[in-house]
Length: 287
Image 1 (cartoon, rainbow, N blue to C red):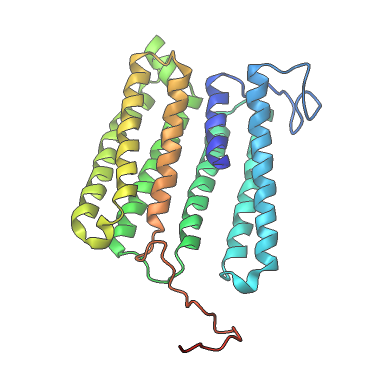
Image 2 (cartoon, rainbow, N blue to C red):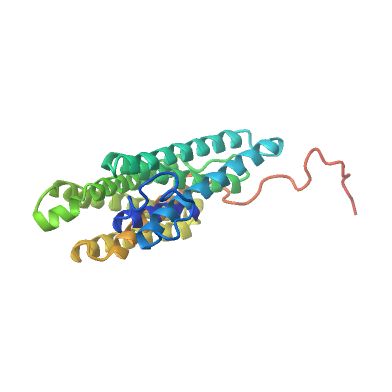
């Protein structure tokens, strides 16, 4: 949830034009808590940094714990946490460059890309840890869910590029840079069709994929909500910030849900481990 909040608050910071509300980094007006300077814009930027800091600390603690109990955990887990900590460090560096370079579009887009990567990685990791067997999902499932994830991820970055260059506003108000808006709207059609194809195929392909109907229903609802919010945003001429923020929130949740689906195993979350470990000194009780 903290990662989703990080992306959404970051989007709110951009929409409310608060990206430079704190002119320095990593402090804000030279202090940890800029009390006298605090307003809505400063709070958004300050809270965005605070959330990122807490996420970094949490992942670092998880890395240390995975090293301490590595004998009882999958061998790849400490390496994966190391990768996540590295991503957070790079994310912090991009955040600093965002302020120093005065919200340069390419850096802001890369900043969002890393944030969405963290969301997808943590969502997929949760599914892998819940599934205690080694039986992977069908190949077609991994292909289609992974393809949907990549497509939605790319669409989110396209929307970020459009937003950070203010292309939608310039197109609606001045008739300029409309190619970004047209590309974002046009690409939404095949991506939505691919998502719908994945859902329909899953419901008719077999018993296991059909049993994932709750996840598939969430994907369908999120996709429909995302399209509706996009249409409303344009109809209102981007004049309602909360709708634009909700648009980014739904996109982030869709990325998280598709990442979870990509990492689902055949047995779902049911454990396949024996009730008594091999190392146990307990003797079998007959009675």
